[in-house]
Image (tube, rainbow, N blue to C red; front, side, top):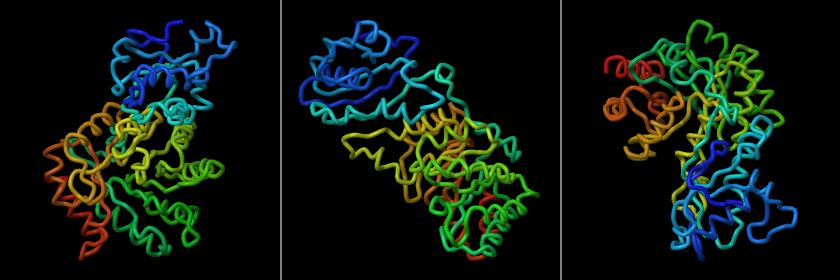
Length: 375
């Protein structure tokens, strides 16, 4: 059985890794490929037939002699699509396969997942329900950045305060509102009550409102259905609820926008981690599981990613028709600077600058609206 191939077979998807080993890159790559597909990375079983290995073993794309000469470098590993039940097991099993047991192999000292190459049709993964084009059509906003705001305080809100905040935001002309990721279902203002407050306000507006529904699997889908059945346009989920949560909602086709929220991702994506997933890969995955909008990063503000990295992230989002939201210190002064460098296809998601405006939330939104509309 050929473990090495010159090119990726058509019936395989592939991932690129940076590996560092205390032996050779070849040994590390083989341990990953075999250990993450058919069996023990170092010990063979009599049940591992040639047919099994041909049909189910991962393949290493490249020349083994080249990998023998290095102890670290980039490798491409390809897996048969047939190894995963894409509908039933989906993104959870993909990530367990791709970024799992190799971290337990002692000869692998670093493993960075740096890219994924997958055919959406072969995997059955769905495009975003709306994405950038559908978002623009819904709010009738073209050839300029979209404008989003964030509901704060994060917890402790009363019904009257929430009602006042939302009314000011929509009167100011915002395109998108997301609840903060800390909200979910606090006793002071649970999801069901928030829906009853917000939906009557939104009846006269095209604003996309994303309710925070962070939760464990046994309640998350119930919350998503409650939003949809009440006429809600969107849900906001932090990645700690699980990558499969986004796919489950998209697969159900309940008609809502799905917003992917990244806070905490550095546990997985920090460049200081010996074992990590590149943020660009997370963005690809978000598009593959049908997210419509994503907190992509920020230029300036208090989370400046720099131009090159954020531009690459923006391109990845746009290739999948996903809206890249720039947030974490967004202000009216930063919008024209960002627009000059990144064009019009992004969303300015603003929190503190709106809530702290001396003349109130509506005035803060109107100032941002004017900058975007007249820019």
